[in-house]
Structures are given as C-alpha cells and as structure tokens.
Image (cartoon, one colour):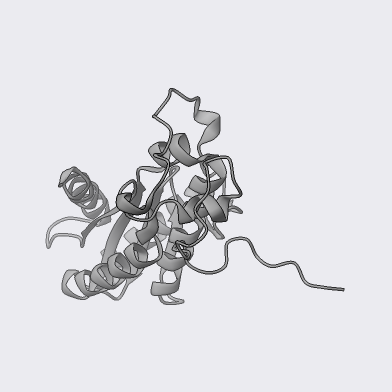
Length: 210
C-alpha cells in the first residue's frame, strides 16, 4: 500500500513555473505568492471574512494541528519553572514568536494555505529548540518557547537562527507574512512572571516595526 505524503512536509516556497488562479490547489496558489512581477493575474482584493477561515486557535494540552503543546501545558511549564528559578536561581529565558499576517493570507489565498503556512512555521520553530526546552501554541499564530539553562545572550542567538529559518521556509509569502519575536530572562530581583511581561512587550515592538 502506497504511503500518503504529509501535506505539511517541505518548505512553503515552491517553483514559480506553475502559477494559477487563487481557486487552484493550495500548492499551486503558494507558487503564486512569488514576487509581484511574476504574478498574473493579480490576487483577489481583500474581503471581510469570519474567524472560521483562520486556522483554529489551540485548545487544552496539545495542539494537534502543529504538533506543539497547548496553552494549558504552557501554564504548567511556567508555573514549574518559576518555582525552580526561585529555588535554584538557574538561567532561563522566555521567548514568544508570532507568525503575523495569517488573516490576510487567508483572505487572499484561502484558509488551507494559511493553515499550511502556520504548520510549516511551527515545525521549523520546534526544530530549532532542544529536547529540554518547550514550545506551545498559545493563540492562532503565537507560540511560547521556554529555553532552560539559557541566558538572554544565548537566547538572542537562538532567535536569530529561528527567524532566519522561518523566513526561509515562508519566503514565498513574505509580502503577506512576517514573524516577530520577544524574549526576556527574569531580572535579578524579579521572577519568571516579569520575564513573561517583558517578552510580550518586546514581541509587540518587534511586530510593530516595518
């Protein structure tokens, strides 16, 4: 019996020699997300859509869509790590990553394309972490990553690798999608909750940049 190929395997960029209209198969529509001078005809205009056309948000403990953990698992990990940091004062960094623009991608090319981009981006993020770290999908396009035994300098190196890797696999939709990061370690007189707050603020700043 022939094995069915994983629809989310491989990178998002595809050869640009098979452009088709937006109603085509998702793989073909992704080819149409090459630079604007290769697109003909133009993508359809943005129209109002309901939230059901976006990939559904994660629920409970495990996110089956992306293969990462869910928001409940994140709460448990943060609670346990907060206690460990207080007791042993070990280095740790909280990272938030967000794939922004999924709503616009869904409007232009369909929910299936947005879902494919989300899953590919999530798998690339998960590939960059160690087995001792944790990655959880918290909202539609937002992920929480806990880097144990990692200070902010080492975390920045991780973020740059992860950013480059994700931008590489999502490059065919780079005019629609972008990925932002925020990170922080607990301050000397603070705890992991302070790191979470600072990382979220840094994520907002990163996403606001042009």
